[in-house]
Image 1: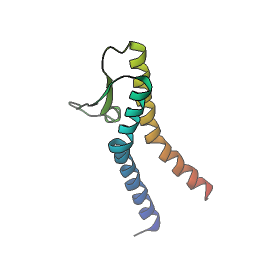
Image 2: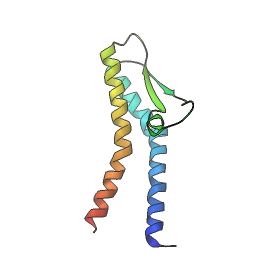
Image 3: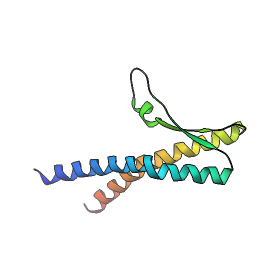
Image 4: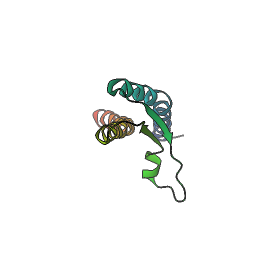
Amino acid sequence: MNTGLAIVLTAITLYLVWLIVFLLVIERHLRRLVQWFFGVTIERQFERPVGKVELLDALFLVTWRVAPPAGLGLRFLIGTLCFVFWMTAIFVPIVIGLVVYFYNK
């Protein structure tokens, strides 16, 4: 097996493992931290896309739902935080990999 192919397959596997760990462990703690900080109850909700599944549908499989009586602004802020946490989990490993790749070149 080619060394470059082995590195790419290892990187993809580690990236998928990172996303699973983020979903199962880290996201739960971030949700509890946001609950504590804002004093609201947040439920984790799994969405099931129906029909043709696109990339954006896959990004929003896990959402946070704020329990009433939270206001619209607070719900928007918490939804934005959830989105930012997910985008950070998705893009930071890619950026780190690119930095390491170009730094060693």
